[in-house]
Amino acid sequence: MAPLRSAAERLAVKNLTVAFGTRVIQRELTFSIRQGSIYAIMGGSGCGKSTVLKAMVGLLRPAAGTIVVDGEDYWAAGEARRAAISRRFGVLFQSGALWSSMNVAENVALPLQMFTSLAPDAIAVLVQLKLSFVGLASAAGSMPAELSGGMRKRAALARALALDPEILFFDEPSAGLDPITSNRLDELIQELSKGLGATVVIVSHELPSLFGICDDGVFLDAETGTALAHGSPQALRDTCDHPTVRAFMERGRI
Image 1 (cartoon, rainbow, N blue to C red):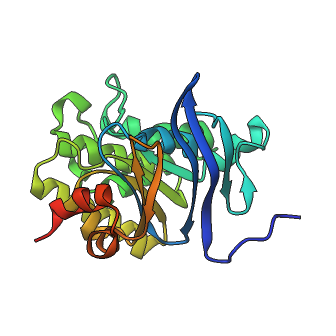
Image 2: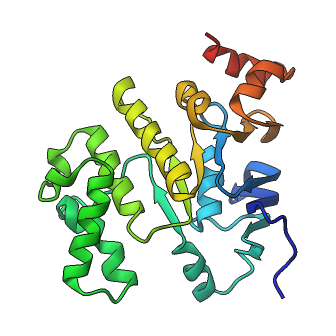
């Protein structure tokens, strides 16, 4: 029998500690993410945001604690079961992580070739749909090196969407993008959440994006190595009285 959980809860992090060897990066983190939420993992550079994300998507085994996906303890599951759960994830890494030897369409097709039994013609149709969604239908034959930074991010997003994931993870999606391109990516993320019902987790310290699209979140601190506050970026900016959080969030006050 699956563990009892809130009907609205999609992900839960419980007493999580992440470390590299004996060096603890973040400790005793506990937070939950609602179905359909756009959830921010916030904090300054070096606080361990991306490290926590790696534990959540299965790339780094936690030193302690649990990560629960739809009521199931991810890291307590066997390797095959973890792989099955991970196929419900879509991940956009900061660099995009496109294969440089493949064109855009081939990059997007790769998950479909690896994890489905679809015929090549069906895969080609799905690839074109994903590229059309992110505004790159005309770039299918382009190589990653021929794309701008924003186009590479969108191509990587199309690949992350290939298997119709239920949960999307973004690691610094706006890093290196100009304000207009960053805003377009934010709009795509909102479309995924509202239009497709995806749950989104975003690692970022870019305040315009955080304030613009995120409805909940957790603030991580490098000095103490744990969470200082929970809530939406707007709520933390307007009501949190912790000096570290306030100093960080006040940078985004208009």
